[in-house]
Image: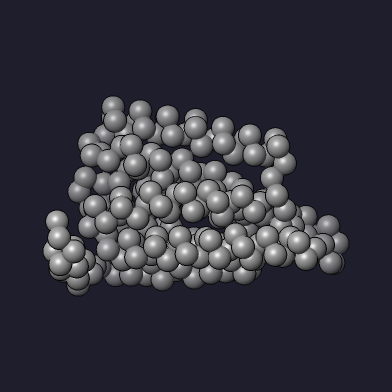
Length: 206
């Protein structure tokens, strides 16, 4: 496919984009922006975005992206958990979960979650669904599971996991014809890199 054909396909698909994908995209971009700023509004905006994204992935494409759809339900649950964590304080001046690096145990746990869910999701998608993208779908899903877990605890490494997840999600969503989501993940990739740098600065500044 030539660049001209890719561009024409992109424009045609954007013109056909329905309202759930538009609102989900706007809400999720706002959520990542708030995450970059270490603002608890990351979670209410994210909840709106991920619930609509799950609807899009389950019901608006054929065959569905089962891993991505289910992942957004997980995002919802982790958003509730993260929202609770982020507002907890030890005292008036200190959060219970400040920005920090992972301990060795947290790092091993995160990587273990990634590997475990990658294998499980891949097997489920390959054996029990009509998914035609089980490898990439499971890779995006498993890396995002680790990302959300680390983010709920304000771990800097969450941004590195998001960067990896977004790199895989960009071609996956393009292949599925979800042009707004493709653009969204390109923006997420840039914001994840910016968030990683900003959180490192905040950590260094104390």
